[in-house]
Amino acid sequence: MSGFVEKPEPIQVPGLVHLHTGKVRELYRNEAGDLVMVASDRISAYDWVLPTEIPDKGRVLTQLSLWWFDQLTDLVPHHVLSTELPAGAPADWEGRTLVCKSLRMAPVECVARGYLTGSGLAEYQESRTVCGLALPEGLVDGSELPGPIFTPATKAAVGEHDENVSYEEVARQVGADTAAQLRQATLAAYTRARDIARERGIILADTKFEFGFDGDTLVVADEVLTPDSSRFWPAEQWEPGHAQPSYDKQYVRDWLTSAESGWDRASEQPPPALPQHVVDATRAKYVEAYERLTGLGWS
Ligand SMILES: Nc1ncnc2c1ncn2[C@@H]1O[C@H](COP(=O)(O)OP(=O)(O)OP(=O)(O)O)[C@@H](O)[C@H]1O
Ligand SMILES: [Mg+2]
Image (cartoon, rainbow, N blue to C red):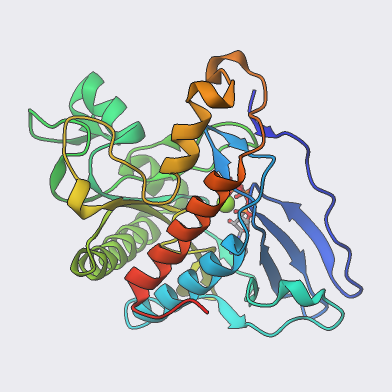
């Protein structure tokens, strides 16, 4: 079991058609045919959307994604048209709503990895490959790879995990030219972001991009380089050989797996509400990530 403890009712706004409730975001279409993406304060851990929200998370991640889109524009254009609130939208959508160009999406989760962990590590331990790419011997959880690699995945149905696929499989699905474009853009954007984060004491272990096409032009869509789409590790605590602390969710994970929470991860029971001190510490980590990465103050 996984997913929502209780799926939220989407807010209805005149002129907007609600399309989709994601784990974290609500998706609408406006009358011009553009997408309206609204990031909530929901947080997920261990495949569950938790029953407790993290105040300001939606705004922090939206502003972080916008900042990153800007850092990447010379590499690839992005899909954001406006940050203006649609007429009639609730005032609290401010800062966490993006009006985006509706694109023909490539059906591939474009993951770049510079470090080995998660599903990459699992495949490596079986076959010394990730997405079919051969890697050197002797790598452990958290090891830096010789260079960044493109490890695509296919989008899974709701409640299921994305499945890693080989580059050849992507080329079969989208064509060789598009596959090459996706790989090139993914690795260029990852490398740019990795270097920016590294200067600021944060390791960007891996990240996922989603691309679409506006006519023939490749455009980066969805959200980029947020803690929800990326693994950020505090550089000063990096120590290969075991799971690295997560920049944003470590307090949540530690508390959920502690005796205090009373929750058994294996039980298939939904996780309990987070106590205030975990909420506060987690909010502070999101703000810290934003401030460290962008060099800007969070108001
Ligand atoms: N510019 C765009 N044009 C068309 N579709 C887009 C664009 N940007 C993002 N999308 C799509 O919008 C959807 C956003 O959904 P969202 O990420 O909130 O939920 P999800 O992907 O179903 O689940 P999860 O919460 O696990 O990410 C995704 O299907 C994404 O591919
Ligand atoms: Mg998504």
